[in-house]
Amino acid sequence: MMRLYFISFLMVITFNGYTQIYSKKGEMEFKVVQHTSERDIIRDTLKLVLHGNLWKVYSKEESRLITLENNWSIDWIYSLTSKGKKGVIKTGEENTGIIENDSLLFMHPPRANQYAILEYCPFPQVQFPLYIGKIWSFDLKVGGIWLKAINRKVEGQTIVQSNYIMVGKISWYCPFLNKDIDCYEIRAIGNTKFGNTSLQAYFSETYGFVYLDYKTLNNDRFVLSLQSIISFTPSFQNKTWF
Image (tube, rainbow, N blue to C red):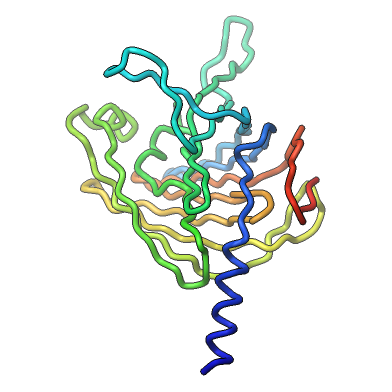
């Protein structure tokens, strides 16, 4: 009994050794493959820009910008489907935030244009300490404006009830390191009044979310995989960065 208790204790310690990633300045690039319900495949590139400072949002109540605690400012930079006058594909930029502290990592996904439907999927999330078999839930109130993403009339809020489980440890091939890295597989199901969605996520203690596989309300899949990391100046202990 003492031996089993000691092993369990070591497991919790191992999964709780998280050092903040998204509070640092840098840039991540993701390859995106969208599988549509019509069996089309659409490819895209997303850049995640980390500003290294806290996210500021406008408060209607205070009529000013306020700083959100433990919520780090990020930009999703994406390609738009429309083209400019010279036939060049324009890029768009979406500013949002990532909550990151000792107990929670919570990422806002890209949610502009074709990505707007991800608002109804489970958001990438980790609750610490993390261990195999851990389950948790999270409810998100989604404003009516997002119903346009599923071709419905704008009305009241929708609740997305997301249930998460940490399935286990896996190896994932990291293209910018040219080798496999250890990750933890997290699966989640999102329940809404319009149907169910899902997320399969691979989380690295060193690089954060490296793989995100969303299934949406219209049965499309968006698969994001990390391709590169640029301009990081991390101050991590016992961490090796590319």
